[in-house]
Image (tube, rainbow, N blue to C red; front, side, top):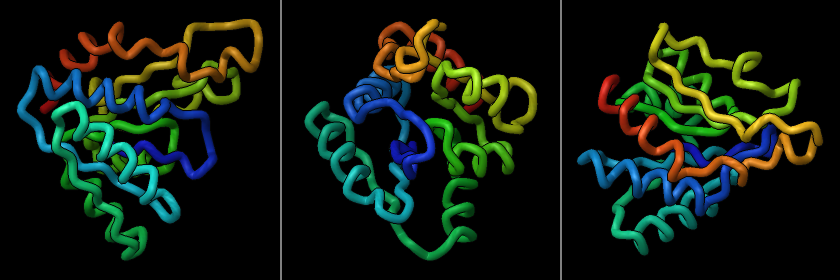
Length: 159
């Protein structure tokens, strides 16, 4: 899971990511690895602490050994979850199943920026369609409990 965005796109809150991972871990025995790009290690550590408070053990992979090493670490994943960021697209290039979170703004929709995974190996979520641009980018409108059944079903199918 990559909770960072490098400032390139709106993203879920750490609390939303925590609820998502905790909900996944209730259904599946998985190992949780949190990735962090340059300047994102603190955010990953915050998420790790939140997860621990919810009984979920996670490790942080924040090695800064360059893009090639980062890509190799992502390629080892059984699935990859992130906002609309470069790491999500890196995962897709090696066909790791991906779950992505996208703003509902016309310039940032899942249809426009969908990763290049093979068919059936990507799942996308966005806030409900809104007329107001700010509301369309409000990722807090994504209700984690509502999407968990779909996420768990997807992961059960692709992992």
